[in-house]
Image (cartoon, rainbow, N blue to C red; front, top):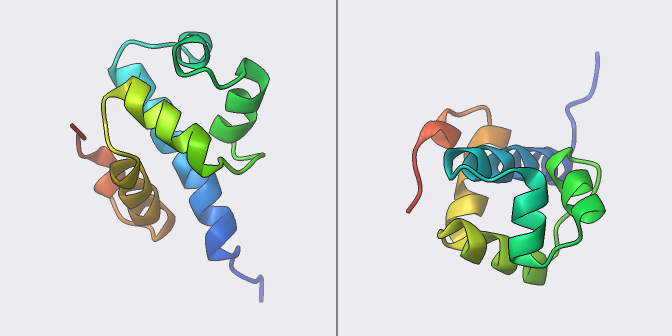
Length: 92
């Protein structure tokens, strides 16, 4: 029987998708989000693709740039990782 991915890994991947979704809703490309947030583009790309975890400082910068709270992004990611549809709701 295949094992379930660890919740932390699932949240990391989900958070990347949530950040990308929110940026697109705001009309921002990954490169624009990187420039405006101060998070280097290669790092942001790895975060969005679930290949790197975001640290708290980066999360705060990205959230501020997107005009949402970091806790909102985390809540959406947790819902997405748990298989819920909460990532569909708008933040802000």
